[in-house]
Length: 328
Image (tube, rainbow, N blue to C red; front, side, top):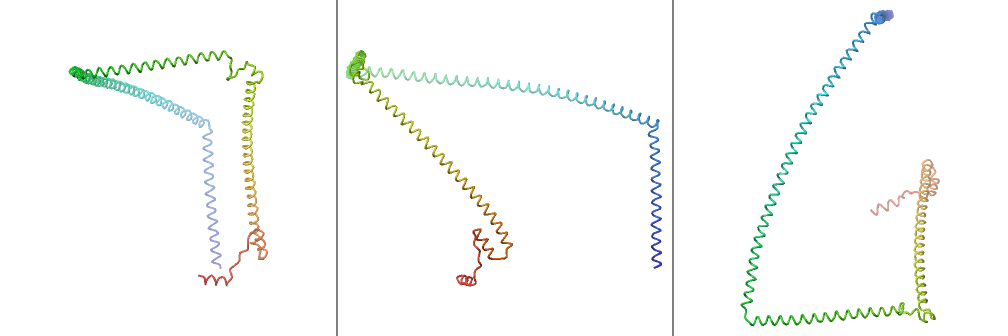
């Protein structure tokens, strides 16, 4: 026990010595920091220190300003150099493009002229072939005509008589047809003239729809007025019938639209009612299932199931199980 107490005292003394050394070191470090801060503050806030600091700041600012000027001058120089080089490149590019366009234009003109020369040569060749072919055709045609004339001249006199006879027959038929046509035209003109005269004569009689409206018949029997009245009544009846048919058609359309609207409203109401019933049944079913879970009495469970519209499931009997097994 004494050794243990001695060990504890030695450890306590060692800890106290270590604590004292740490406190001394901490105090010395703190005092050195305070002295150093005091010296730095004295130097910084003294007139010579402030003057040196201000002069140093002025020199740094002037140096930064000079460096900024140098950088700005270098930047301007580089920008100007870039602009000059870009302008030179652009000028070279423009010159190259102008030369390229000039070359393409010259090539296009040369190609166009060459095409025109080829077209002219082809047209000239085509015309030469056409003229040559036409000259050959004209020569063959002239030879054929001359051969035909020679053949006709060399025919026998009987052939000439037959030709003359056929020509005479054709002439007689032609004269007969022309005489018949002239007679038909004269008859047509005569009928037209007679119709014109008859029309003028009927105009003088003052007839209207084959009725003499100025005679005593119109005054006594009202022939034209009665006809006009009947026609007017027929027109009025047709208009009334058309209006009635249109009204009936519009009424049918409105009735159809009303029926469709009522049908859609009934369907929407039925759907809404079905949805409400489904939600109510769902709520009742949830409530009933919650009550079934918490209800130990089977009779109450059967009552809840029957209120919800369900039947209580039953377990199969043992006899039924045996019958099912025998069936299998």
